[in-house]
Length: 344
Image (cartoon, rainbow, N blue to C red; front, side):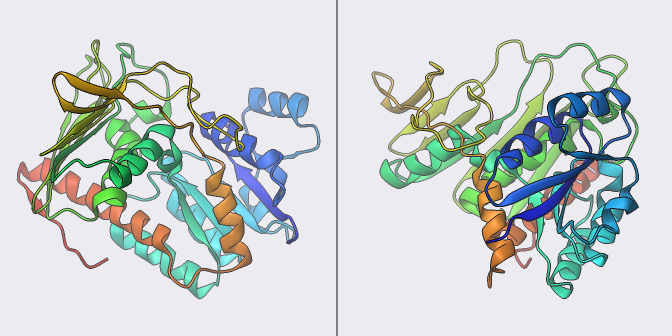
């Protein structure tokens, strides 16, 4: 296949660490342009990637007939308008999570993508983390009995409030919009849509303008998912925990390496992180952690751009995450459990 010409919009942490590295040497993509108005980012790009064109106006990218794919690594407030404009200009789009704030807006954009015969993807890169890949393997190969609960957390210790737009009063700021999409995606991709959701947001740090802690519970017929993230965790809980009637699994800490940009000869981490399959308090089996396979996101995207999928499970998952996130806010506002419709 011919290389897909693409442009990255935004060169903050996401554009710099999660998008450009897996694309720059990918055999199916050519990064023609990066849009950034930040002088330091422009300086860094010129030094590290002199072959990449630096653009400061979004419409320059939209009007460029060579560019087939727009990757939005921007602040959340422009996700909806930038995605819609790119689709109307017949571009494929990758948009960072949390994508948009409502199911109706998300459905509108996915419907527009279909009308334009273009691929729209939400960048759920954490589905390719080594620990969640390890869990998928364990669920297929180990006997947990009936799973009673699943826990996924993203706790950190950050007592100071950084000067970042995520901590300001802007659209979709705060820890809930930043981290819940990862954890909700984990739960739904493993167990499907829940029946009920309960969610609470907290403002733990003095002077915070937005939420910096959330605790969400997803209720299924025979199991419960506990999802959460906070920034004052001095003694972290398990990153993941599965409890079954016959066995449990726990994993502590964040993967090392955190992001893997290309296939590895050694499939397993040497991080030394605690990862155990437990059948009794006295019977614990150490489980090797797979390395991440984050490059698979763009491998799959190239395949889907080349050959449009008949059934798009990624679209369903993205819509399901937005729906549960939206209902989670309703739960927080009403202080009640909210029923989740199962028709997406």
